[in-house]
Length: 534
Ligand SMILES: CC(=O)SCCNC(=O)CCNC(=O)[C@H](O)C(C)(C)COP(=O)(O)OP(=O)(O)OC[C@H]1O[C@@H](n2cnc3c(N)ncnc32)[C@H](O)[C@@H]1OP(=O)(O)O
Ligand SMILES: CC(=O)C(=O)O
Image 1 (cartoon, rainbow, N blue to C red):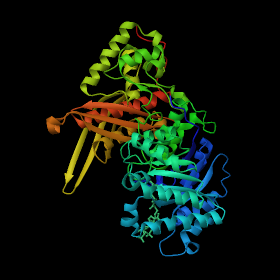
Image 2 (cartoon, rainbow, N blue to C red):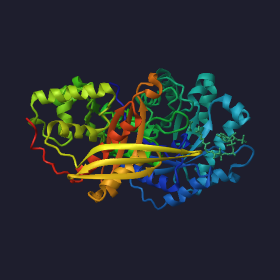
Image 3 (cartoon, rainbow, N blue to C red):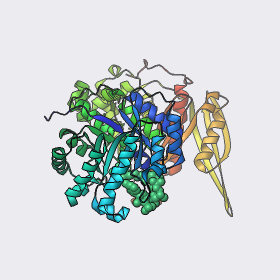
Image 4 (spheres, rainbow, N blue to C red):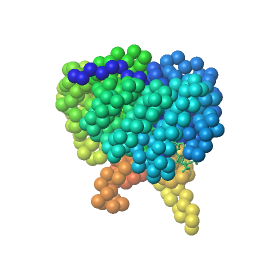
């Protein structure tokens, strides 16, 4: 394997990451992310562009009090404005007053961009680079030089692209970062170009790769193999368009595939920093994200689970704990007895008390339910109730006798009323409630009937209700699957119902949701798992 040296890790989540569609960090968000990146052990954090907006400017003021231990904060900007002296450029002067020692300056290294975007001559662009870097150096700054569109520039006019690097080097840049700004390069070309650059440029090189071809991590690795010293990227691959090199993937690769010590990095915090940044960015974490996604170490196929239980290395390339992730086993129609046994344990039962024929019968039952449209892999609470109803002397806290839904339409308004009859502790209870639609009315009526018996219900709240049409070919008579997510003060759980009648599917999921909530809050008369039916 090609040997590489431990790179300098440069995170631009707060700058390029904030250029992601749908992401807008507040100053408080930026401060929190900077602290987490520092704790994680990143060497440099690009905090923003102080000349771009007051928020970034204020961030650098507030960041003075951060007391960062492992990381150095960097401020970002373009080269100076065209047509003014650099000393008079407000944007460049804001870098000097940002309270940082290191700045990143980006400049055009593709002649096409110089002419089309900047509308100046190639010579004038070289002068922008020289003046800006020399001025910052004169003011005591360490300057990283981002050669924007370097690879595209090299492909079209290598001589000019190289000239921009040469000017940056001669003007005093301490590291030159080759940018695949449009994300269109392939690894073999990145390798060739870096080999050529290394023959002519003596300062350390870096890479800033975008992911428009899905190759940002691969291109960064090739660059490292060619001796580039600084890798730029973001947590979760946030960034303009398709994003940047994903450090949540790249860092574990460096650690576990290239066996680099990465002494500063707390590698077992990789999953938590990924989830943290996604939460702050108000984005849903990607389940299938390598290393850090919820599904990265989740096993579904019976063949896989059977082997995993014998030895996890059979279907895992690294242990999930190494990156702070966890192994999960799913139960579905693709399950064998191994999934079931493992899931039974995970749900809190003692799998060894189940006979082989009980496991077999449960496996077939689940497959039959899944055939009807149920999906238990995301509905552990319904699965646990199914096992208790099937195999234990379990008595639910209430039993439904019947329910009725009445809807009245008065011109523009429709009102809905639910009437239910339950049996609770040998008493028959009736309740009536109105609601915003049938499911809401049923929920209210159910709570009305039960709250006197189980005051804990006030803490049990429905937080999500999802309906999925399973077979749209039958039109309005199609089967639907309803998933309900519920929470109490400590936990959340999900239940499932399936029917061609949306109210019935919702009702089944709702009943499971409330029944399970009462059960885990110790309201059930029968809690023990020892009385398994033989
Ligand atoms: C590849 C990258 O991701 S680089 C980072 C890109 N990030 C951002 O653009 C986010 C922050 N940007 C901003 O807040 C604004 O664009 C600002 C404040 C920088 C500039 O705003 P405005 O002055 O209104 O200009 P506008 O955004 O319309 O256009 C960009 C200007 O920068 C100029 N410019 C672009 N690159 C450079 C450069 N390397 N050096 C000097 N000027 C440059 C453009 O020619 C254009 O100038 P013009 O208005 O005279 O045509
Ligand atoms: C500098 C930068 O963000 C880029 O070239 O993509």
